[in-house]
Image (cartoon, rainbow, N blue to C red; front, side, top):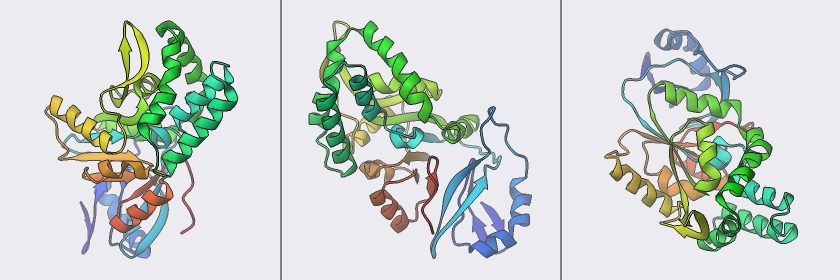
Length: 299
């Protein structure tokens, strides 16, 4: 903690959270704060901005600020979990894969687009039947060989994914990596779609919904528990147990109320560009809100 007079400010590497401190008091004490945290700016990748939007939660209401990332050092390694769609990515890879298939004429464009929209709305409304959706979304994988799918995915990355990888998201991951944290992406989207995206972010650990493979082909069925809602918590617990890890010092970044079960398990829940339901929960619980892809709503 950085202590300023009688005030205490929790300071985390890459993110500054200010609690119980009025905005005028913060700026009045900013010179003292800088003595604690230093003014050296971190070395950033080429063309990566040094600022990101950060929503600051105060007990007496919300304030918004745009703050530089400070070069704070931290002694212990934390486990940092990232949701993928609409969190690290400024879009939904599962939805975009469906769009891509229709554009390439690999599925009936009108039918697939309508169903894709329906499932996406049900997901946002918290009403998605994950098994019905997986039956729909995994079927095209079973209709092509692994080589064909690999070639299609390379096109998909170029056309749909690269444009929605933001510099601020890369910076956020890089800040956690540089302080030695253990990083993982945990997502409901299947591993065929998401594994190359995780590699682009340089994150080796991926916990995703697993499509079944037999005789080097996808079957169109799901293997193991889908990594969705409570299933995401189960899959994470299995992963932690297999690596003798725990959530003692853990972060989870997510945009969706569908991830509330996991957000409530970690020590540092960080909603990112949250949906309306998650934003309301964050206000109630005093969770900080990070905006990576959109400007925050008016105060």
